Image (tube, rainbow, N blue to C red; front, top):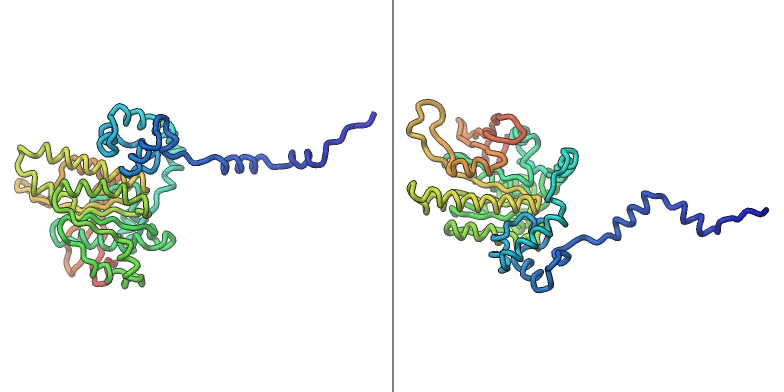
Length: 341
């Protein structure tokens, strides 16, 4: 009996590798957008985009009241949208430590270009983190902000983030002339660096919080690599005076920090905040200074760096708090070209 032979084209189909078929299917699968959320029509989607919500993750991490206020929706509608976004973005459940480690590989490191500081921070300043830098006046807090703003614009293979910088200035301390000096110190084009740094002056605490919300809209058109608030507590400290207003101040500060941390997570960006200090008159020994903001700021910060002056124009940076690094200190200098070992 004659045996049937498969047609030539059919045998070729069977020879397609399984890995290639899977890859083709993954390429065809469209990326989900806010229009894919159940109950979100064109009008609602437009409201969400106007409020700065372009991605599912940005919606999923909001509270119902906040989303309702910012997108001008009903709270019940906002809650349904958030729950749908959580399911579609797959952030509602527990994940294994292995999966979390894989997600951590997305974290980038911004080099300070100072070996001692980078060694202290195991390679540099992490994205998706809120870093607090505090110290007394003249300790170099603003200098670190300026230097990291310049470094952020550098390519990733050179220790930068190849991203734009959002700078919220509350004390009128941002100086483009200093950016030019630091850019030339690294051989960068000062005009190109300044073009990627977006500065806004905050005139009070309410304006400062509003500017943080405005970053959500700005991030639609630019690659935000870093957000700087210099200084975080200046307006809050001046406007909420006395113990009677302490609770209100801490609540607003906590809300502001929550918004900043959300921006860090959604944009895979670094948030750097500088902070003032106050004296402890009852301190009998040790350093009598402590940072403003209390436990609210201490818990919200991923990393805390304490800066102080030393002899010969040197500075000392001490790592006070970190989720995975030991405490330690390093010495560096602030010169005309920027921060140096």
